[in-house]
Length: 396
Image (cartoon, rainbow, N blue to C red; front, top):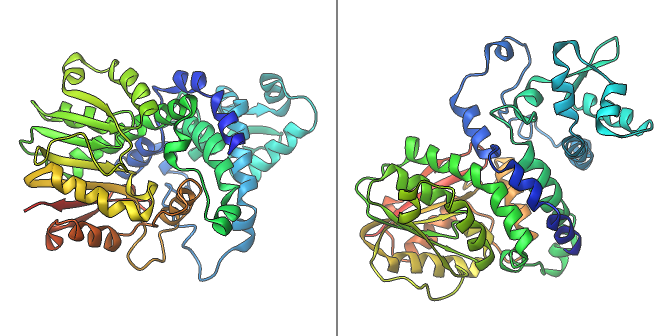
């Protein structure tokens, strides 16, 4: 854990420079909603991130699973060194290894070894003349000038934060002990890095939800529980004249959220407020029956299982009759056999939430019903395909 904190402390300035970039959820939704560029669509064998590789075949590819961490570190190292940007700058003619070496400041054969690994896993392509070019997916998503770029998220949040936590998984599984998100985010730099890295992706999720999944109607008040930067609140208030939103968050996250709020239009700033609170607290500093919507994005899988039902009960108390609880999170199907990325994200949560529940719609809806919501009116929607789902519950 100390290693993860130490790595995270040096990230805030770099994340701040990248704050305007897109992170996975924006890129994921663009993949779902937009056709591939003609130049890419014409190439045979180019996959559009369908996430079918984990599920393909009848048996596990043990070597790919066991050695996958090597490939991910090759990708993270390329992002740290700026390799993809350098190769992209060379254009269609390609870039020689010596030019990459000079740009990255890395001497010795180890750079060629890294380039070879990146070529072997198809991030790069190498010509007979020894010149490197980018694969279509790398060019679209890992080059910082691309509008679909989310390399900053992978570099900073996944590569420098979550990767280290996953190394503790065997010990966490054995001992049942892990730091909580609350303790993790008590470090100001960790909280700031995480929140800023996640912000633009959450904005994209919120916009997709409003456009494709949810009719907000004439709501006037919203409670954004564990709302991070306030991304959902900014999008919802922008889409709904007169809507006011209260974001409940951990103190250090609120600090970063206030800074991001200050960058929003004045009308949005006036209608979004932050209140410091650990959402797992049994009492929320809000009035009963005062809200049209209570939102919980990435909260249910981040708290101990025993806290989920009290969270939903607090949401029920806070909602007006006819109000809605929105739960968005990483989830697998009720059959508990996938999809793989939803399952793996659930497993990642274990390293900072050892007593948490791997979520599926049935488990969420069962607890919603126990909290008082109408079980037969609960609705499940796919959000990020293969990773997250949205469940909407109604208060009679």
